[in-house]
Length: 252
Image (tube, rainbow, N blue to C red):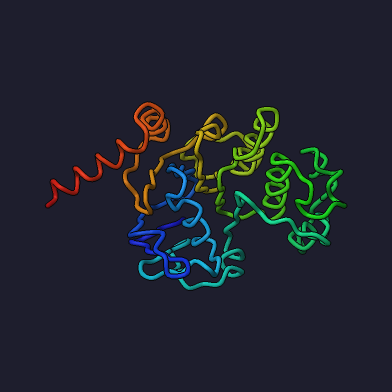
């Protein structure tokens, strides 16, 4: 579904990503761990095609097609959807208006969908203006449920969400990926996803297949999501960096 090869990215001349390579197979949920400032959000923004992220080398392939230079609207039409960590407030635009545009010709009952996640009362409000952290996440996920992309980019879905809202957000994401059906890891009928997480709480709701650790703009290692999370909690990211440096020394 997604293949990234030796990707290098900069913003305003400052390098953010260095030779990043990773893959997400069809029907696979991949987790991306990493400390603050590692470049995780920059990677998702680059995949989505945000213009201020400049690819200096490397390639991005989606469904086998090179999208490295593709505009953001083309990527969206191909089936990539994103939930940003900090989406902007859009004063003067009602949430309902945005959802109707996103729905296009698709037959969607906005009121019913919004009501199912306690968002109906927000439809006539300006987008994200005065929303709590959990309400912003639910708004973003409601938009994704309307768009129905094939591939989800989810940037820290737990961020700013209190424990009461976390279960609702987690189950919403699970239903989006599984298309409201029961599904297990490596189920070919699942949607594909690349999910950034700091706390790992989202793993209580998702059947994740593999994980990568990104530090200092570089992929340090990959493996089983639960095992890597356990190692991060007990040893921190520093151990992963030391392991990577030792591997490089052995290659020399």
